[in-house]
Image (cartoon, rainbow, N blue to C red; front, side, top):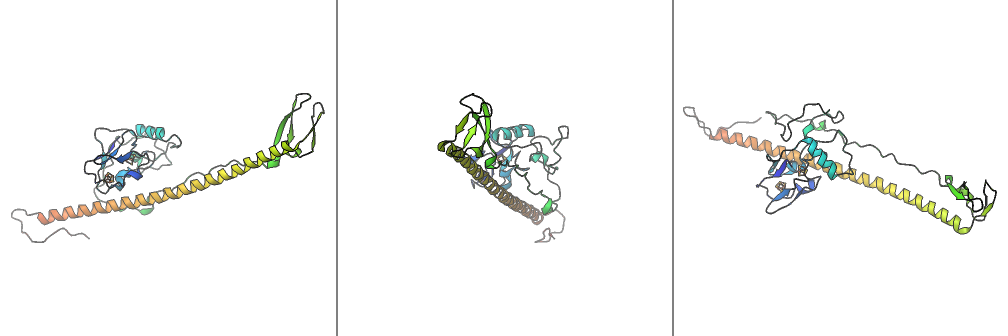
Length: 272
Ligand code: SF4
Ligand code: SF4
């Protein structure tokens, strides 16, 4: 773990639902992060989701537990075996890099566990700089026409196997073995059994595919809503930080009283 919650946590609970690994829980007396579950959001975001929403900025790097990106993505893979993270996964270590051009192994990496230094002057960020969410379409299998199936039959007379199209299994139909020419009479229960099996299988196939597609669409919508919320939350946090910087500088300006320097009461730095 390289993220921990400091003692100044106010127990607001905002961070808990944001963690993609369910690593955060209510502890006593404050919320805690399970070091065996935290991946610093590597694999999911290029920032720590808990830190992005924390109103008092107490989700911080644990200086006594620094981990590399390799260790963190390995943990994410172990925690989410159903997810294919690929090589161009989200990671704060790669923030600002082109995800399509995954960082080669030989590329110079940021020192593990260190956060990128803030620039000296806050520069406005273009809103459209974040890449749009995109995912590959599912390549669904298509079932063949229901009457195109062939069914293997073993002749009770010569014991050889031959295939007959499903349409041949109509009640009363006579099927001849192509090897010994022995005939078989299609009984009602055989025809009924085959038709029922195919119809049930096709219905189930359609229902499962529809449910799967609808579930993915629901998850995609929720994912996009969550990212919008995260972006809004992060923006608000930056706004608060900016205001604090302004207030701190105003305080310094108000309180500055250099010896021998003319003092004008009420002076302060001004902001454009
Ligand atoms: S850094 Fe990410 S993975 Fe770790 S506790 Fe925070 S939200 Fe969870
Ligand atoms: S968001 Fe911050 S203050 Fe709120 S519970 Fe989490 S760590 Fe504590």
